[in-house]
Length: 180
Length: 172
Image (tube, rainbow over all chains, first blue to last red; front, side, top):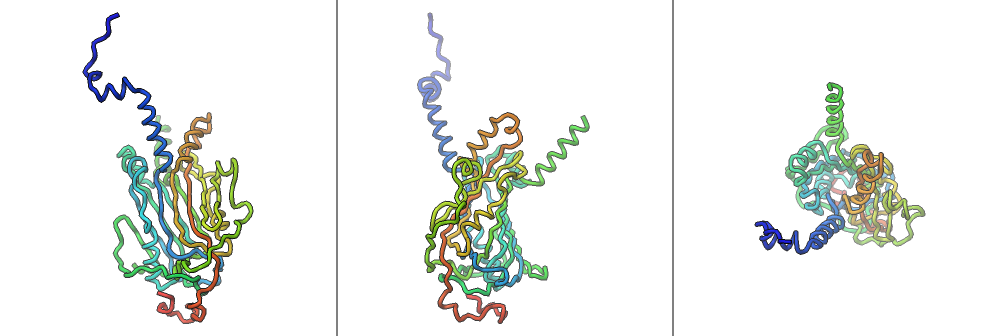
């Protein structure tokens, strides 16, 4: 039987090595890619919370002076595989808000994250290449009557009223008036 | 025809307004910014019974709280069509188990759509009937170091802020 004439694609050394001579390598490479994806995780958040979280402080030991609301967006790429959040993703805004109120901490802290409406639209339009995700931290800014545990205070060096891009920081007085 | 268009429109509105993979974690206790707890003694006492999940529960709902002094909180969320959270909606119980009456320092939120989430999503999508509706899984994770609560020596004599109302005495 006469062998068929090689096509231009089959003559290509790269094509030939990948698709013809070593088909097992393709599976191996895909498996490796899948393993990396599974091991590294998508949409990874790695953000510190400042100070200490105390379970010994009762609600009677605190005095509410305002509310905290930090809204942030973070952009992930390639289905969330690339783009881990920075360590100070939330801490800087929390410190700013508490320090501006002359308060000590945050009670009733709530963390929320979601793929919101615009995030889905952007993700859909880019076929997952760019996928933003929305994050919200809310709580009550409080003064604490109990003594702190031994350690250094978690504070920012300077307090300015400018917010970073993609960040919304809102701290309101108990009366509801916005401070910044 | 018009009914299907209206239905599709409603589905689109619900889909776009509520957001996918909505994770909510209500953190108990009070975040005290006056101290990072660096000079506090680490608490290595055993975690409360039932804080750590094992076997199928760990697979389905996350491992709960693991570790001794350095603890890892893992809470696995499940969703119907990626929108409505079902089963194990909040990680507040896990936070309470890790915190107790003590304190936590070096707290970090480490949420991710991890390898187990990918596997579970794939497994669920293969189950007839269930696969079409219950397809999403997302892991909320946090890590922290447990510390014993002892008052700071320098602040023992501090006048409570509420009594003075002066922000300058609050440790900043």
